[in-house]
Length: 617
Image 1 (tube, rainbow, N blue to C red):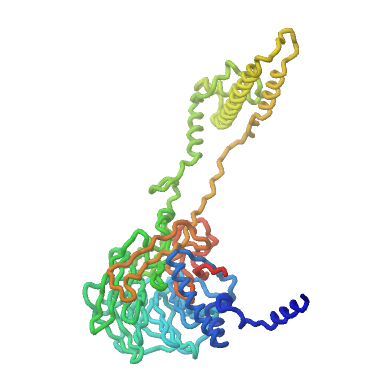
Image 2: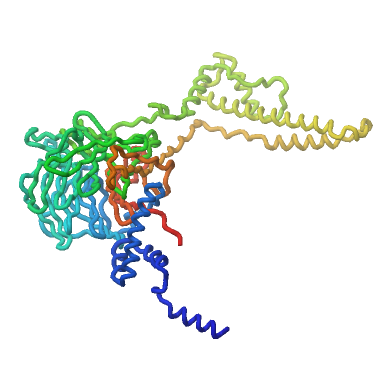
């Protein structure tokens, strides 16, 4: 046996990782971040290359399956866990290039815009700020940023002047900046036939072209007034020449803040958007743009199950995951819980600001509006406060009206103390009418004593009722075997038991409350209902892979709050990584958070990851 054990031991020592089955090796590689570390594993050998490729493919498939089944996991990385960290912001631009997520620009509600560029290393989970050279873009928000080869392309956007410059309008841009990742340098591009300055538009890459749709524009033909657009502009990235693309009619309504999702090399999908210049229109329609021929074709799709759609897609970006499109928004069942903040202040014509004020200024002004504190207003549920009821009782006592209560003249057991007798005398004086010498200030104390007497009488009557029931039960219990005890003068055993029970009930009497000069009820603590983000999924499989159906469908979301889901945010960024969705930044959309949690900032710089559950081997 010792020889067998020694041979097995030697064989075990000679075993290496190459002796593991492919399934076990893929499970081990799946524990690595699906970015640079997993890519480095491909260089080990051909077997590791194939296993790493299978891990990436299965990771992507598991995310699609988890999204379709609403079986996701939320993971948050707080800014305190990352040093250095990025500034809080919203309405920024984000995109994925290689193994990094890039964030540019954005703003805050105090009309502060940024022009910094941050890189988040998805392998190390760490923020890095590249100190680039070249010509930087101006600080701006509502811009677009797409990746092309080894470049990041930043186009458009707007910025608002300082609060002291009351007579200056919003400044929009049509500049194009290229950021070269390899050289860490910004390059200002001088393109020909440029479109008008715009912001809030959508952009995507198609081969060697950048396609831009919609947005808010300042056109010379409209006397440089802010207008919504539904034009399509195309930038040839090889010649750096712009052209306005001809499209068929009907076409989508003019809008901004929509989502433009590439489907394949010749089709893009347009989803959502908003128009707030004259009348507020929040769009939930869906269009497909076929980019073939000299004239591109628009086609509107029917949207099924709109009751399960994401609310306000214009401030909740959409991201494609396989044959699904994901949008994060407050659940439909939570819209009556609190007043939306950003969605209630989207008019561009602010009262105290010039026409064309951005959302940031309008959000700041909306915070200065008085809020209703009534517990029963506008259909909200609540209860009337007890202060009003106590005030009514005091007013009734001050008018020297008799207080209704039980009679204390008949059938009363003398167990009350002197204070109770004083209370009874005061009550009789109160019932005497206007000739009473009692001061109105003591009516509140009299009412407290009367309520105390009433409670004790109620408890006493209830105790006596229980005692009588016990007496009747003891009287007829085992009556056939009872002896004649008429000559016995000693108290019966049952009477002793009843006396003990009476004494026990008297000891449990409620003690009279302490007298307070000005009794006041403590205000109830306001409970904040936490509104969290819910994942909404649009099934687009009917228009992919050669399917030519004319509809898409929203899937029924999972009811209830998902564990780890963040509080409701809007104007955040949502991008797709390798087997995960990455959400960054945003602004809180709930006024109650600002009213009752002043210590909490309304902007966010946290990172949230949506991942599928891990497999168990």
